[in-house]
Image (cartoon, rainbow, N blue to C red; front, side, top):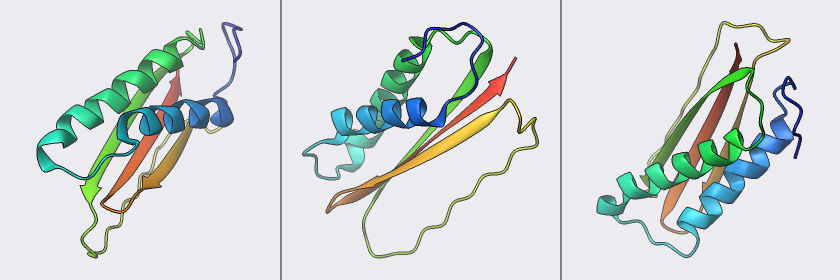
Length: 111
């Protein structure tokens, strides 16, 4: 991973981090409503910790995590940002198993 202080928002690095966070937190789990707050917090904390280790102090990061049970119901989500597309960035990762879906998004806003 990069260690340069003023680097761009690198989607591939962020995706690697959030995929790892989801796998660590949700691997071999079955949906349990009472566990969702703990799982989402774990995914967010792990993601932010690893993102901070990129040593890119020129960004503020926002991490959003959504976990919901598979019930066959439809679900749609979208986001939009008004920002400097040359410097700011975002990425999302969708994960699922037999009992749940997880969607995690990271937004990086250059300071």
